[in-house]
Image 1 (tube, rainbow, N blue to C red):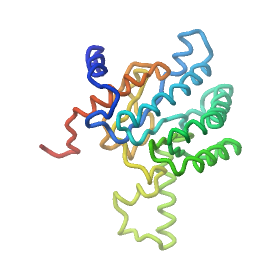
Image 2 (cartoon, rainbow, N blue to C red):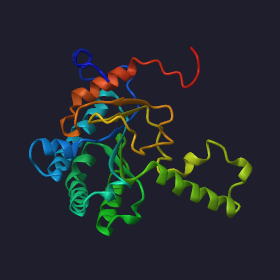
Image 3 (cartoon, rainbow, N blue to C red):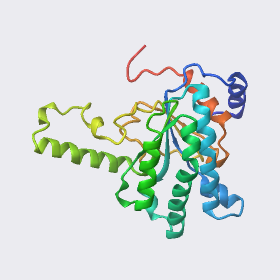
Image 4 (tube, helix red, strand yellow):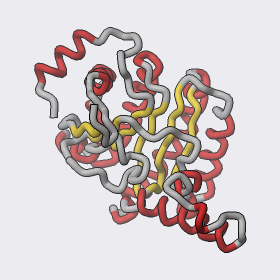
Length: 252
């Protein structure tokens, strides 16, 4: 956890422009929307709408500081346990966000991908997700991946099922399966592993997010609630990452 003094100093030192040693891929667990709204005497969905507006600022900051890939955790497989009103409101928010942001994301050069199990989502939302992916398929400025109805264990289970089917069908030999095999079946198979994972709101949990992919990622757990998370704080965290000595289990 960074002190306020360190954050202020990094914000001072880090002008807009590529951050030295900036992580190529940042993943964010966007937590704290509900608490942010409750603190203001508003319903939880008010916080989710505020959080959705924050996404654009962080996406637009990525190319300025050198982040090529951004993955955000929008809705987990466990979030279905929330009240029916909140879940319905979130699904409506996702549909509205995609419809409203498609043009802006495309014009900014963002390529959007979705990961997670789409089977439980409604047909209209699935159609909008596919349309957004297709509309931005040629963009390369920022690669934005949105985890929607996503869970790390669920992803590994689905990947293992597909891998097992390929073995059963003779397309893959059991003796050829190693630690490089499973990633080819994951939702993120076209993406590099995250270098930095940020969780807002003060909770120090990874919440079933990118379990396989984050084996060697650096983590930052910060107290800021997601709707209050600014581009300056994002930039400071990326600058801090650039100063770390990553050994990947080795000795230097």
